[in-house]
Image (cartoon, rainbow, N blue to C red):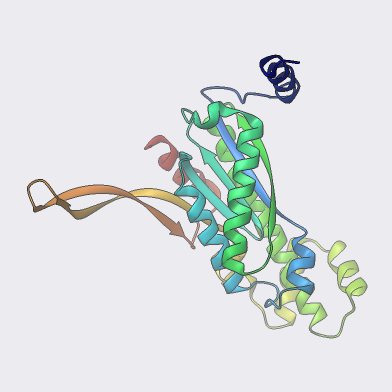
Length: 253
């Protein structure tokens, strides 16, 4: 069989399941650590329920992917997940699903592993959203998930550190409401409302314009310029204030 014939035939199989993500709408990617329960509990001695070193690695990983060729408008991280919002006009890789999934998961996994000095693997899913309101709802959903996980995590480790077994701590938390969980923490001297915001609400990152002094090599003179720099917010607002921040950031880019 001639090479061109064989090449065309094999490529037809290779492309048979290709999908193109919808054009001109918001596209999100959520990356989650794969097997991180084993990684963080058995292979990595981290502080419970939150570890600053792990947080910093996740933030650096988020900043790294926002600094690549992807047109990221907004990034969010909590626990072992990262969410990225792409510009509706971002046509990188022609929005081919398989390219976006593999490049994003490979980029994040490799950078995280280098920073952590141990193997960390992330899976990736793509989420097309038609309106700005849908985008705001998505990020409010992820922030609420962060709050839920944070409250449960602090309760679990408060119980475990005070003599309860894994089964006992899990059973107690399962039947409690959020107010009851906060009361439980108070019994152990922990005021949940005063814990660091990043533990409760996660961390976001976005681009802001910053005035700088640049250098013109042709005129050999310093010149004022404006550059976009990544801003990391560890004190995220919640509720309607968060919605307003998201809307403003997205509409200004």
